[in-house]
Length: 352
Image (cartoon, rainbow, N blue to C red):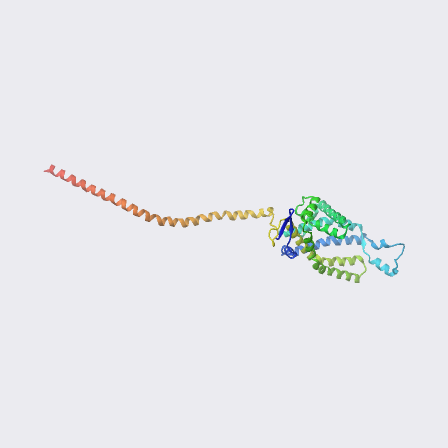
């Protein structure tokens, strides 16, 4: 990856198309699981609030009622508008406040693990509830900082949202970190990367518009069929499920963006290596393979060296042994003959 270090943080200079390619590579063969997980996330975020609003909600048109004053609108038209106004319940607000943080953390953990080539399942999305308090606190801190910066103007609010965009990834990567630590590390990581993050997010705008068309069409059909606000909202919620593939694509790409910022990504088209705890399970197989290699080498060396020694030793021994053994035997035979000749003359005179 093309990257440079400024004040001990990585500044990404890769074009957005290469970063999106990382997200697609991580989703290869896992699109179905990722889309189902996002659909479950969207259903958890939309259906229960609709049920609470329909059962316990109050028509928002009541906020504009002023002793029967219709604000210059015909009474019949005003009544029709009142009936189409959505209802709102404080229970739905509490529900969204309580589950947004844990579900966001769980979804972030899911896509971060998937990007690292770990085995993931849809139920892993609910792992964020194991850190319920910390995820809720991190969401509230993010909302507070973004809101305070938005009071200045909309642009500072957008910059603040980008500045703290990596907080949930940091917490998902290391749940032992504190809320302020995640916020500060995200702020440090995004130094020099805010423009790149904004351009990367903007590159998905076409897909987002295209995927939101079914929701618009279904909502229009709901208005034609009935004036019930709950049914119309239900049609729209079903239509927004078509945004799931794009959401999965974005989360996977942003996981790769974080991996680069954290220094975990080594190669351009491959995710971070498998952690040590997973690699330790495969290590015995490598040790068994290496144990069979050393015994294979000595037989090759012995087979090659043995013939060489046998071929060189016989010629060296034969010339040396034959000359030394033959003269010794001949000298012994000559000495025996000389002794016999010397003994014969001495015995003949004694007999005569």
